[in-house]
Length: 85
Image (cartoon, rainbow, N blue to C red; front, side):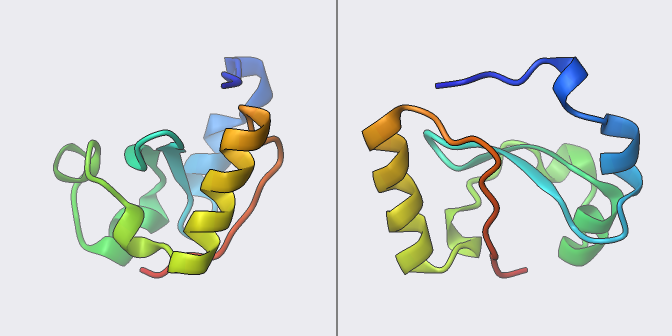
């Protein structure tokens, strides 16, 4: 699994991006971080949201496809997907 360095993520832009954004541990679907829009969309505070399993926010077909790709290559790079709020 590939780990992104701090230089590869512009956290300032991510935090203030107007649309919900999530950083998720792909192996277990746990939320590591979300931006302000993600907190607002889910009506939660960061301390009550981080660590939750976000598999339920995924479309089942997309989640299975993503897990298949992750098993095949061991990493996903520049992968975007739509999820439910």
